Amino acid sequence: MEKKAEVKRGAWTKEEDTLLRICIDKFGEGKWHKVPIRAGLNRCRKSCRLRWMNYLRPNIKRGYFTKDEVDLIQRLHKLLGNRWSLIAGRLPGRTANDVKNFWNTYINGKKMPQLAAGESIKVKTITKSKVVRPRPRTFSEGLGSSNVHNTRSKFSQITRSGLNESLKLSGNPSDENPKSNNASSSALSSENMNQSSSSDEKVNECVQWWSNLLDITENGQGTSILFSDQDPMTMELMPMTLEIEDSTSDDAIEDGMFSLSSDDIWELIGQ
DNA sequence: AACAATTACAACCGCCACCAG
DNA sequence: GCTGGTGGCGGTTGTAATTGT
Image 1: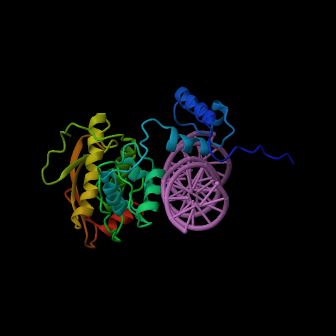
Image 2 (image 1 turned 135 degrees about the vertical axis):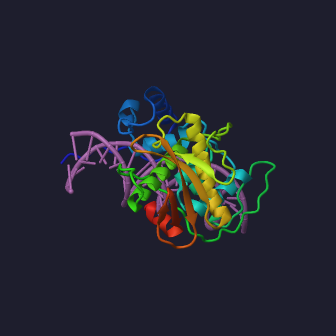
Image 3 (image 1 turned 90 degrees about the horizontal axis):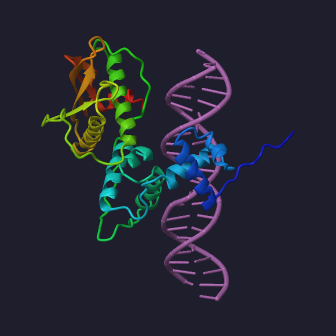
């Protein structure tokens, strides 16, 4: 039997980096199975993707983590657990691998992190807490009348769009979301719910989505998230409120108000 | 200077979700 | 509904660089 051709492994050379960079410049990201052929590299698709994502991609920030970054990592880890890609998505220029290595080295290892010049930090004690683990999910259509199944679909939809959008973020937007003017609660409408949203709005919504999640951990108790849903018949936006509570209770749905316990959220987001 | 121990992080592996056929 | 291909993720390992003795 003929032996399958071995692909190269181990550290990348400058020449390989150049070939990969040229290939991505020419054909763009994606279609990773074609990249080794296009680039003329004797590497597997995964290796090419990893090299690009963790090292060659433009705007990757290297070097020490700042105090703000460390603080954000700690907060997000408390909230999300080891969801490195999500955490990295909120740290412009940082990769999931960077964040993961940083965490394993300094935080888990109980060592003092290296900081950018002029920065100082006192690493907080990480206390064990319930972790919200949003996960992009597929949801079936059927945004109809208020029922439990419907609620789940909506929540999945919010979760998915919020996370997927957040992964595309490269920085914080500067302008205000016109829909986010509610002082006591925050507005959040998903891309799926409003196809006509501008990209700026989507970015703002996503930032707001993250802020809300962080508020959950900051406040300890539940928070309220005001978001928009789309009427399946008229395709018009409908205001709704999602209340996240710490207590255990049954789904309480009335007049578009969903009251969910933290356990419910775990179940909804597919843990 | 030589060697050992430790650190930092790049790279690999295996698994899972998604999607098209 | 099933299956294979693909992209993506988190956990782990490998190793070059650095530090200590």
